[in-house]
Length: 325
Image (cartoon, rainbow, N blue to C red; front, side, top):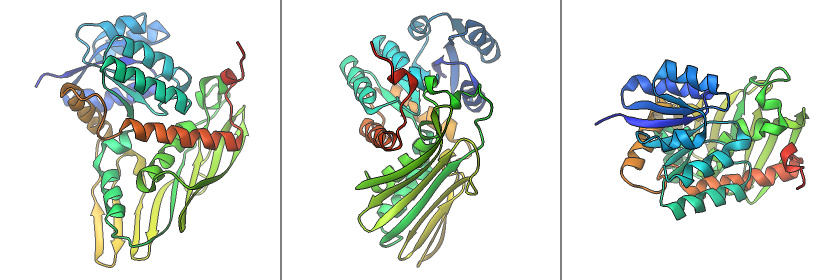
């Protein structure tokens, strides 16, 4: 089968990280790239192949492009995606999908109107380990659930120039790293009955979050940070009457260990979850699907609604949302 040709919208650090993980497979190829700074797009194309373009529309409209991958800063996901969908090209867009649920609903409605595929690039759920954890929980292997701890605390936002510390770019811990444990909890247990949360702020954005999802009979504790490990780093543990499941780097396809009354079970890791995501998204696009079976639209919308509620409770409002027209 010939390689799947991608248009990359964004040529920053995330784009380079993805390119290194998928292009060596021979199953994917860069056809076109756009970046706000054209010289970055040129350097990206020189390194990975393809052609640099000066506008999103030109990159997406390239006749050789099979699908579009959007990896720009959070604040412009919506605008970039709208432009790609208008050209009726299938889109895989990085998390956080948008900055709020209203934008997410509009984009999926636009995709449906144009008859094109649109999915959130939540690589955790394109990969098998997370799905296998979900299955183990839903099958009742743990018995009655007593609680869970899901954390993602990483010291990745340093210096005033970090995009994660810029309100104008929709930075902060919740949308950038908190979306992973929030999504994981939602995929395992659904929407919580209520949410308790607090946050620490710096430069107008949240840099750490403490969140409790309250369900019938148990709580899920979520911790997120872009400033420190907070003593927990990345951790997943789900406990029930009959045992527990735990994992380390759960969000990037790491395996897990299930210990139940029937013994120990190892859930195998995905060694290249990013490649798995692109393989599966490309397969869905090629097959003519209009939405993902791995990350369905309603899942993305529900998570965005949860994030909206957390933002409301902690008082997180981005600078561009404060503007009046």
